[in-house]
Length: 368
Ligand code: FES
Ligand SMILES: [Fe+2]
Image (cartoon, rainbow, N blue to C red; front, side, top):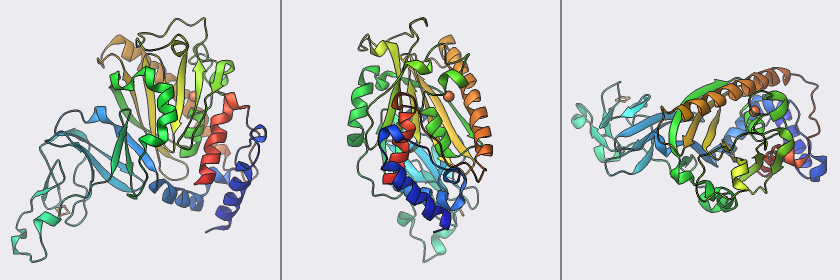
């Protein structure tokens, strides 16, 4: 363990013991040090991590590929309709089996043409009968444990995490009337931002920057001054972004939403890598994957009550998301450059309604 890692660890513990009104952020090396990131990645492998949305694999044969902390993954809906998260690494000599996304009856490794079914079973391996080492039944693609929570697909790379849903009951209570089960995936895209993954988690989870950074996009809808922290848990943090009363109602509303619920978006982060803004009409989510200290790969999407990706409402909402995402990206990329400083030693955090989620996140990191 490097000197920096030892120092950061001590710093994080000390910080997390502070009372809430002394909440403080971490020094620059927390976001830039390679050895620290290696330790984080080991920690992340032990967590449930979000990798996608069930709307990406609706019908038998649907699949997508992704990567998490160096593991190549193949997510499929098999012939029986079961969701599978398979290792996308061929059991022959280890090449990638599938690429991209789509619908397929089988997956053929392009190197020597071993073919696998959507359930991961090896179907065919040319000319292998002559090998005494070959046992077709033992060459299925390995499967990772997964859990679906409110449509998001989580996996655990270390195979030993306690069930996820029961850890999120508090949050479930907050969001249940918004009915994620009735919201369908209407948009999905991938992107890479040149910043540390934690900076993006923190940015999404604080309303302090809404007015300053998003003056023309989000400030007219959810200004900073109306943000209110929600109670966190060991598995999530969040706040309510209340709508400016001058902004038109954001319907269509689910009939179960209370009058109060119609006036705000619960913004929440499921540790460590899913952040969600749940507006009354649409849900925006971002799935974060660290890619080095200064890059984060993002899978972001929108779900909505209307199941019509081409509708004008969906276009307008995605355009709004693109606009404020661009504003965040710009800020986070200059932040990452500035964090190369050896002198930045952390700063005081704003009160809980505005930056309490950053504080929650740092304390969560300390416990891990
Ligand atoms: S590595 Fe896949 S068939 Fe050889
Ligand atoms: Fe933002």
